Length: 60
Image 1 (cartoon, helix red, strand yellow):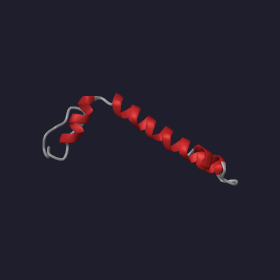
Image 2: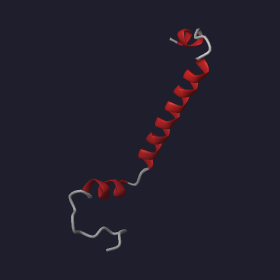
Image 3: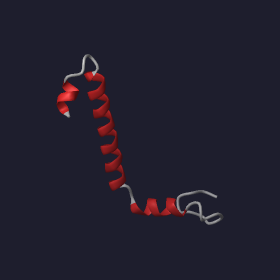
Image 4: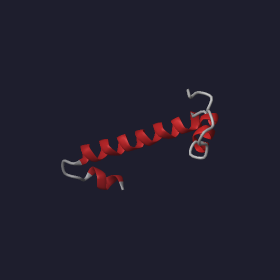
């Protein structure tokens, strides 16, 4: 597979850089999701269900 990438004529820089950017983006998103506050996820998941209830950090 990597031999096919190395044998490209002139386009390998764009392919490799886009692959690296793609991988870095999803690694950052994965780390962000793992470190996200579980209470925040719970509040946001119930947000469409709660219509007139006050949430702790919102002002009415």
